[in-house]
Amino acid sequence: MEPGKGETKITDDQLLVAQSTIIHRIISIIGPFALKCAVDLRIPDHIHAYGGEPMPLPALALSIPVPLEKQPMLRRLMRLLSAQGVFAVQALGDSGVNDDGDGSIGYLLTPFSRLLVTADDGSPNMSSYVRAFLEPDMVKPMYRMSEWLTQEGANMNAFEMAHGGRNLWKVAQERPHMGRLFNEAMACKTRQTTAAAVACCPQVFRGIGSLVDVGGGTGMTAKMIAEAFPEVKCTVLELPHVVAAAPKSELIDAVAGDMFEYIPPAGAVLLKNVLHDWSDEDCVKILKQCKKAISANGGEHGKVIIVDIVINTLGDDPRKNEMGLLSDVIMMTGLGGKERDEVEWRKIFSKAGFANYKITPLKGGPHSIIELFP
Ligand SMILES: C[S@@+](CC[C@H](N)C(=O)[O-])C[C@H]1O[C@@H](n2cnc3c(N)ncnc32)[C@H](O)[C@@H]1O
Image 1 (cartoon, rainbow, N blue to C red):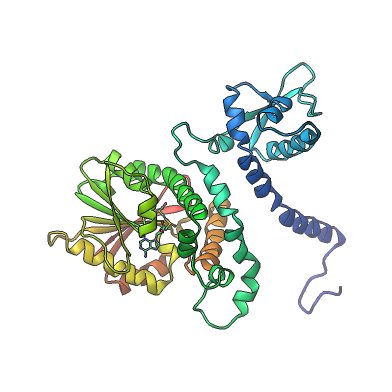
Image 2: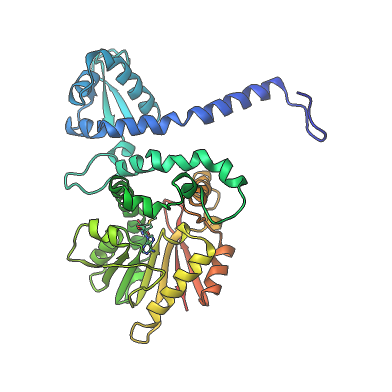
């Protein structure tokens, strides 16, 4: 093809690189599905149960179990996942790391797969995240993105288009399996972020007296805050079906309701990974309810604590930046929400009647903590 006006001629070498980049990017979709297969087969659990020794392929195949004729295929799956850092391989004899499937190598967990081991106490782990986000119901809207983008009207997101007009929360309510996976995925993801928030910014939570975690899922974040700051009385406000399915805890109260209608009064309202689910107009409505809740608390003015991505605090780290941008497209197609930069945040804060805010980026991930004052 001849270059267009203003385009420079592309060399054959550049075309070769471009072609392999396209192919690499497209077949990379296999990585997440291979990971899901390993999670579905509980391979991290089997290796963990082997007691810290490298687990040979035949032993792994036996414990899954995988029939003898499929063992060569299991070896190939493990070879890919090991090359991607999900598992580590170690030679069992003197022949070096020779992955010929005869049991001469063993598999070990890496920090990556350690996070996929099911905890003894049954608490959620990142395997729920892998499974929840690769559920066919979650992937479906991706096939409708171009159709959705070219259709007139902004009243429906791609998820709703793919699910007969029902939004994610409705589908999660109707399909308990998906709802449970989603809530577990959120609970697990929140552990690291909440631990980072508590460690980096204890002053954000000290002295607030009471806190309502709005859209707080099954209560993981509220429990962690109640444990770290026993003087703070923590409550979760959630949709009724989420409250009904959440484990009961003496540390926190749970209130079933709708954040667009009412938020119980408290010294602070927490919105963690909630506002990015919603349009600017909806965020303003939620924040106005938050303002009422913190103002009604004995007449004192408290604060709103937001944990979400702030696009322009992601710095030069390409991984953080890409996570922010990928998450933005997920919010756009999945919920009609968005990841925001500081200017976009400031606009909704001021429309909801908040005068001041302070942003503190959290270590190790793309999130920031935003304190919002009336
Ligand atoms: C992305 S999840 C975040 C969960 C939790 N805050 C976290 O960080 O793990 C958003 C939550 O908002 C809840 N939610 C959605 N609509 C709501 C509403 N109208 N009122 C209260 N909660 C709502 C959902 O059930 C879901 O648990």
